[in-house]
Length: 140
Image 1: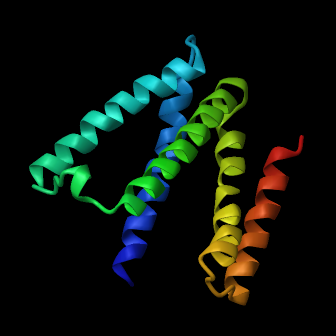
Image 2: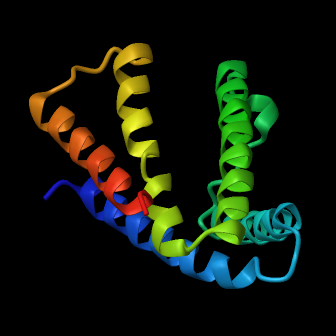
């Protein structure tokens, strides 16, 4: 199996864990405040990883295109997290998390449109199954 698959599975596991821990953590406080607190911990954790692995580079030495797209990605992440925590506050984690995974479908569409990636029939079939699963889970 390709190395990226292991990291993708790790990402999926931790995303699932995020839903459960986030649902518990967002109880009784404003969801935006919960997102801010989460973000501070993420900053500390990732800073420790970057510095302990000696991966730090001065942002002033990075290409401006890199900084621009990382900034845009950060805004998208912030918007996603703010929506996600509010959804967790209002709904059950067992329904919110699977609907949130429709991001997979959006990523496939955006990769085809903007990155010119080829859409294979297996990818399309998987996207349709993700959509179907989200609909089945979300409908009362």
